[in-house]
Image 1 (spheres, rainbow over the protein chains, first blue to last red):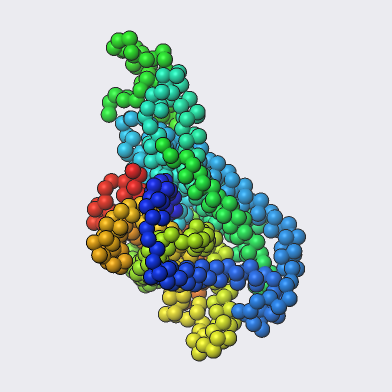
Image 2 (image 1 turned 60 degrees about the vertical axis):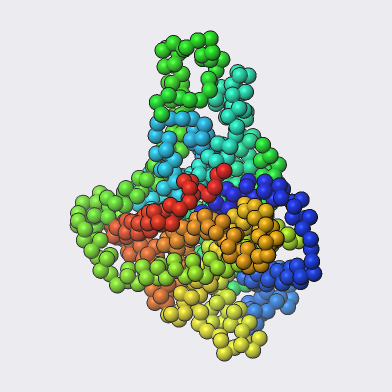
Length: 302
Length: 327
């Protein structure tokens, strides 16, 4: 789903740097300044609207239930750390965190490795059926997991993978591959043919070229698809819902929901659990958001 | 293509001294095939096994009445499909999906375009703003659903805020009131996914050369004229891709509805979708044959929409449009 914006990032970064001098040379009038005030105001409102529900969840975790009942839209009167410390002190949360982490890391690893290999074959080899294979992956892009979930559940059950993380990971890899391949093929195609010729003159096989030249050059693309795969796995809901029935195997989304229904009267603690479950994804995203931009501007010079 | 056009692979097989003999060429071809199998094989096996095969399985089981255990023996022909297509609950769910498809485009499209145009200036904190409006997209549906669910319940923060600001008259039962609930759902969907549209449009806008707008400005075009006649048409491909992704996403909507409304409230509050219908009447009812048939119907509807869209809308863009420009 997120393929396209990131796909266009290379273009973005290039053109930004290219036209930077022209833009700064443009005259800045007073009219422009007042209109940019409007823009800042709109942006501020927008950011406020986007962040308000998140702030509600995080701040709610610091309140007490009576506070929430009396004034549902208020700020914490007394900052109450016990909700968070209770959640952090429970083995349940950390077990689900570990499950989510394992599922996301293994999924990402395999999606990236298998996707890179397939994308390399599709972008650097001319062979019969190449178009058909590419079309197959493109078609996969059009159908999210929802439509296949019932038979997928049967398949995973028949393979004896119910209630195991493997039963979640393998389908996630399969459904992550289309985006990965589609994003990486243009990346790898953009590597100049001369580079490959030069490498082969220096005695490098095509697979050696893959290892020594393509992998380093594809790092920005790999980071992009890696983030997509990681976040998709971290947030995945319908597949664990079908595959994982045993609380010990729950990933964070399932666990958060189970916690919310189990402690439905303890709103403050539910909010604390919910905000703790989203924080890893937020940290991961903000960490790598910078690396995407940095990696792209650095690597796509050629 | 019959011949491998790639450059020589190894020094030993370099045919520079003269035309290569049949034997080395053949060896080279087999080596290439081996490499291809090694590179493509794993991805294709996983993809076919867990994406293509399940769809085929759904098509097969859709013809059976099957509780999910043991072999499927009770062949019922197209009875499942007849039931689906005549079930008012399914019609309702389909209607909700259609409504969400249209309203998502109508609400998110212009809003995201306007925001992207506004933000496509040299702004301080631009990258911070970009990251922040993208945050809801990164958060899981469960967190979004639980958070909004708590905020929107009758005694929740939204009504509390309305009370505080003297707008208490507008307080409502946002979640379970039929007719209102689907608008609530649309607001949540917009909040969650608009960041994606804005980021997509911003990326598209930055691919449009500034020189065009500058030339138009010199010719006396106003800001909005420039946006309307130069920027928007050039942004067309990006908008069409976004609309496609949005339509497919709306047709498959499940997580948010299931988390906020659950199986039973979704049908009474009028927010059920084809996917929630499928899970409620398939897995949760122990009718895997029926659930598979619903999956097939969903698949066919999505496929038809995707093909029609590609045929009539994306056709205008050059090939590879689905995946964005790869120039």
